[in-house]
Length: 101
Image (tube, rainbow, N blue to C red; front, side):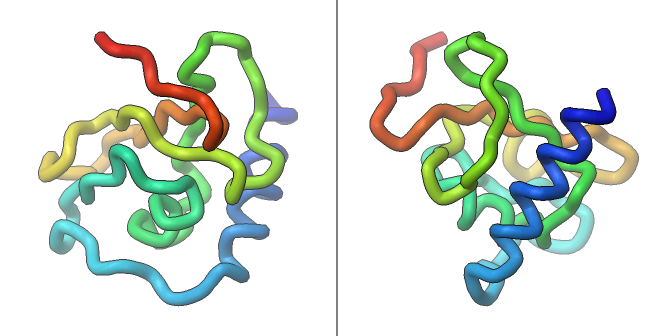
């Protein structure tokens, strides 16, 4: 658990240097980040350090460099209220393809 938290913190601290945030879905709402690069998704989520990343290919890989990853899916769904909900982004490397449900 500690390793995952440190990994996420390191990844998002690197993302914080990337530039201005994009517009989100409104106060307290989950933006749609599916299909976006992980840097843009993190910007849209205001660099929230509680956001978790899950390997979309089920290999248990950790995100070390956010620019090399993209979002395949997200929980909660776009437009849902975020208040008190854990946000998880399902991510894969940029050169990989998202699995179909």
